Image (cartoon, rainbow, N blue to C red):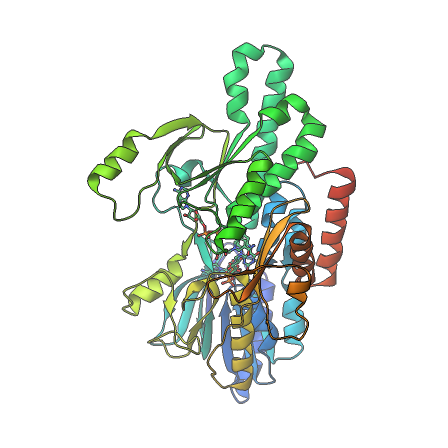
Length: 500
Ligand code: FAD
Ligand code: NAI
């Protein structure tokens, strides 16, 4: 039945939904009747997974069983393949190739469990006493759902560290929408600059053209570096071809890093290789410089960065050297921080550090029975990477499947960073005990604090990056789309149609 114009409240055992004017009513009715049937038999274990990212979906794929009702709650009905975001922002690949609909995964899991339900909503509150999670799909429905086991895999969000103006005027590279917005902004600034050049009065518009063509990437962690590399490719291969030599030569890409070096997670020698490569490709890499304010959509302030324990004099000195520069596009890749749900739960559990959920060796949230946290949402000493989230997801999925909690052991395979067309760096964990060591044969030097890792640079690292991330895609359909995108970009150039 379709019920329009009225508020409806349904309570079915441990599940209740409050919905207003809801076109999706039939879906929920089906869910309730299915649920009621099961209630009459021996109750199944209800596993609730929050998040459809690397961790949540890895758990979903391993956690199944005949007596399990699995509910996955996430505002995103797709899995976002984050390593491809930088490429999608400049049209190297279509954004759709980085977004895998989760329906196929849900159907797969459903064939092995009593029920698997996807609920498109944001979890807002977790009541650990009564084992309930509250979620909402803004303005459409509110849910209250009980759980036996709850997996918090909601990831993290961009952190602006309170730098004024970033939220208002900056762009980001964290979600699919961020990439679409950035793509649109780059194209719109190129069109404006091109129009101003076409009008002919170069003198009059010169400053405005230079401003429009100035792209600032804040933060030279792996996100900022991979984006700067993609932008350099875009400039060299596509802007020159499509907008002409003058626009390409005036397009300026600046990568700003507050720390003395770029790419913190990588060995310094490898980071230096990356820095040199970017600079050779025309990227203005500024280290030891912080963006201290985004003044408007058209200007940002840069200052020498100071350590946290700097004296007031040192801080004043840096401030005195601050310079405001015109900008066309500013992308904030300055790091990540906890989502509100995670902070709220951490606070309610009395945690002093609310950057993530404190967990024990089995990823169980300390002080919350039946609640587990993985990936970027967990405070467990591991780096916030897809590699960690995936391994933890699989581990917890198996633990849920078997009903046995086991300590999680992370196996680091290495780190890869794409530097664009045919270039990259890789820092790989490589056993040195083989009779013929392949790494010695190919001349990959030892790196890392204990010299137990190997460094690969250039084309082999780029090839590793592409083949690894291609192989890790979740479906053959995505592999096909990505292959076509890469081929198309190679043969006919990047996508510059923009959003239609
Ligand atoms: P996510 O993958 O972010 O998933 C979180 C999920 O939770 C999402 O589905 C989200 O919609 C959902 N969610 C959010 N809030 C709520 C809520 N309130 N209720 C319910 N659901 C919610 N790592 C690597 O190892 N290699 C790489 O090459 C790499 N490249 C990256 C490139 C970019 C541009 C970025 C931004 C990150 C990259 N990372 C990479 C890091 C990696 O993406 C993260 O570490 C990883 O996504 C963490 O997985 P997760 O499952 O914890 O969170
Ligand atoms: P990050 O935290 O690694 O890097 C952010 C950088 O921004 C830091 O170096 C910080 O010093 C700098 N910064 C912060 N504020 C600044 C300011 N005001 N001015 C100038 N610089 C400023 O964040 P990132 O790169 O988004 O990575 C997040 C996680 O995702 C990391 O764990 C990373 O390893 C992972 N990742 C991995 C990739 C890969 O393996 N290829 C690719 C992208 C992300």
